[in-house]
Length: 215
Figure 1 (cartoon, one colour):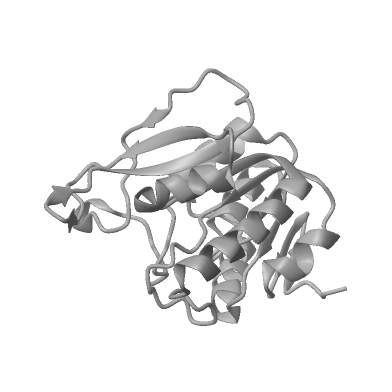
Figure 2 (tube, rainbow, N blue to C red; figure 1 turned 180 degrees about the vertical axis):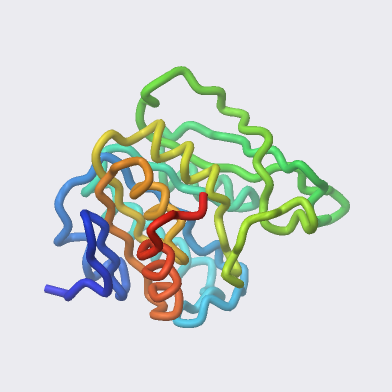
């Protein structure tokens, strides 16, 4: 069994490939994560420039393992790979996250939103258009500390997912700087995060060790 990198008050971080640990984890309410997009970002330990075939194969394996340990799922997915992610998460519900400021141009179109895919019934009535969430890349308007992580996910997105789709426990197979774990701790959930890079594990552990968590 892989030893935890961090463990305290029901929050655990494993520094490894999530495929190594997911089969050994107990069931949780929710898998909530923001996976790599295969966009060539520098995550350190993870290679983010796989062939399309290898990327799909890798994500399909990880999604399958994640669905075996949690009935509810929430994946912040790349909007330009929507068709692929719908096939990876069949029956999922599309959530549109509106940008507060214009995003980058792609082939003449200006990105105005990001997406997430959810499986499971939320605990309350909830709109599938999320607004008033500032995203990394919105310059001056984005006020959160991103810890220089290339794929940092805003706290509000993780908070919405954790509160809507879990009551007791979550798993994050790509926990990065630990935002989902910080949210889980604040919400009184147990949580397991898995991260391949020791650098980001350290950042997550430091965030979790703070008496007053910055939300």
